[in-house]
Amino acid sequence: GGRLEGRIALVTGAGSGIGRATALLFARHGAKLVLTDLKDADATADLIGESAYWLQADAGSEADLQGAISAAVQHFGGLDIVFANAGISGGLASIFDQDAADWAEILRVNLIGPAMAIRYAAPLIKARGGGSIICTASVAGLRSGAGSGAYSASKAGVISLVKTAAQQLSGSNVRVNAICPGLIETGMTEFIYERARAKGREEQLGHLNPLKRGGTPEEIASAALFLASDESSYVNGQALVVDGGLSSS
Ligand code: NAD
Image 1: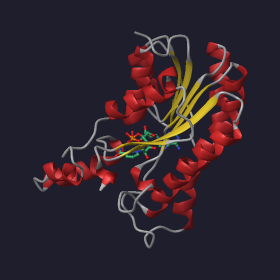
Image 2 (image 1 turned 90 degrees about the vertical axis):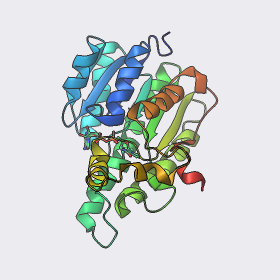
Image 3 (image 1 turned 180 degrees about the vertical axis):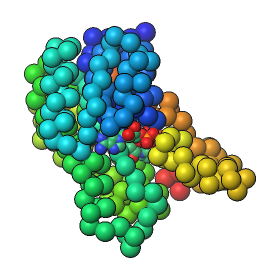
Image 4 (image 1 turned 180 degrees about the horizontal axis):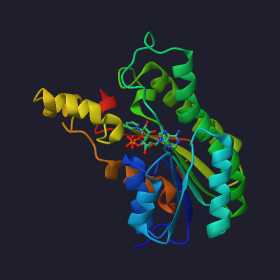
């Protein structure tokens, strides 16, 4: 069944991990897609076919975001859904290991990018009668110890951003929510998995949550589908935690 039939969606960070899995799921549910990434958005588009249009674009660049949003209008006639998902982590660096330039780059991509995506996409979504904007935050934005200092602050900022945007879009029928993934096996966390595997301790990665395993990109994609579709029509300004129970302790 097509839960997104006739909808047009922009996905950033669509070349890998959570963004790619979500693009594939949205396409299976009938959406037309504009896919952006610094690399490999074309490979994801190839997996989907003609309902996907791709662009190489920097998700932290205001101009590139405007270009991607314009592409949705030009190629598909409008925009209904944005998944502002691209992000960078800075590894597990502490605040003592990150200088101002490190902070600026992480905040630019992870927080200012989603803010600019909302800024330019929301009026177009509103003009079509409403829709859904979803930003990828993280459990790192809720608790310490799950990412670099700048990363955690950027993701806490994203949780704040979606609440503010939901309020400021009052009356527009544009919903804005965040997803807070726990540990998900993607390009971003490959080094953590590799290190654990090298030590023969892969099973310990999941021991921090009650399900005792890491999550898959597809498990975040299904949360994104829920928030993108009308099934979540009364969910607004929320941070949906998808972490196997990691943050419930
Ligand atoms: P990933 O590295 O597999 O995918 C991230 C994608 O974003 C990559 O394709 C990368 O090229 C792209 N990207 C990075 N900087 C970009 C930029 N400036 N412009 C455009 N594209 C850019 O990692 P992922 O885990 O799929 O990450 C997706 C989102 O999920 C990120 O926001 C990340 O912070 C968040 N997240 C991931 C985890 C996890 O455990 N993997 C946990 C919580 C949150």
